[in-house]
Amino acid sequence: MRPQTIDKGQPPNIVLFIADDLAAEDIGPYGNQEIRTPNLDKLSKGGMLFSQAFASSPTCAPSRASIHTGMMPFRNGAHANHTGIKEGVVRTLPDYLRELGYDVALAGKYHIGPKSAYPFELIRHTNVPEPGHENDGVLWTDLNMEPVDKWLSEASSQKEPFTLVVNDHSPHVIWPEEAEYDPSSVNVPRPHIDTGDTRKARARYYTDITKMDRNVGKLLSSLEKHNLDENPVVIFTADQGPQWAFGKWNLYDYGMQVPLLVKWPGVIEGGSDSDALISLVDLLPTVIQIAGGSPPSKPEKIDGKSFLPVLLDEAEEHREIVVGSHTGDGTMNRSPMRMLRTKRYKYINNLAPEIRYQTHMDQAKDHDGGREYWSSWVEKSYVSEHAACEITIDRSWSCMI
Image (cartoon, rainbow, N blue to C red):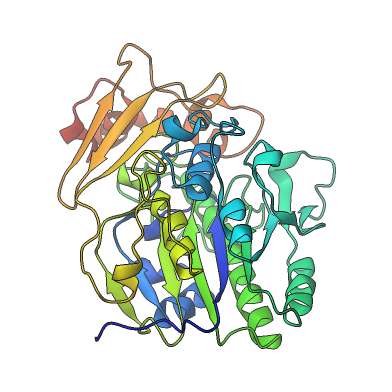
């Protein structure tokens, strides 16, 4: 594949779709053969798949803040979940791109703050209650794509290029109650404990992934319907891994490795892939360069590094190491830790080994996302060496793999 060139005459529209709590290995493009993700499969065949992309943090707010600032959580200020960046100090994606003449809009989940630091045009009525759960709280929020389609229709008649960020709520818990998958046939990853309740929960998780994939399909269809599919850069990723053991709230790969698909017609060869080591903080400077701008040049400004040369086939490698951190999530999941990851090795430093590791999965009793299967894991630990190994905190690492 030869290095590609960018059309300097017309800046491309940029579309970023962010899934919520999704592991790379749980979708079709990354080898999962039982999940149904036809739209992501199509996106992957039309673009480049990154097999070594990592979040900066295994929780929503820190990861999303890093995406939009190009800075690691402790540098932008949003290092614990449900916290905001340093207002007035840190610049964000909509600020950079508006300066380059882009209209910048956001649909769906927000979970970044303070709002004054993120000058997005908000597409209204994209956050709606799940049908039948109108009074059941924020965890039953759904993504409505109809206003996105209307916004794209209006954007198609404008001269200014646009950047559209679509944040889905899936597959964050609570997963759909009615599963589209057969619990008896779903795969249970080896670190998890195979019980009937686990399989039921896994079927619901897969159902939410397929639901998210349908929203990706709606977005791609809207781009095509409004004749916006010839000059867009479409990026798909997730904020971090899922609410399963060894996933969210820790620094194992299941919690930190994320899908990253980039489609750019006429520039990126369809069906290509890269094992370049990427951090999600690299998205900001890459998008700025795609938009025709220059990322902040001094290292003290941002931590991200543009991987545009990889997209243009001008380079095969990007980073030698990525880093990650976890602080906590309110009064729960408070196990501070740090991560170093190369292509071959990972190092995790537990900063407070005296703290018993617990998460929403075994502690939260007010919603599904662990409570529906955790008791079956504990029960099985009395009769299964594998189960006892997985849920006992003082076992060695070799026991847990």
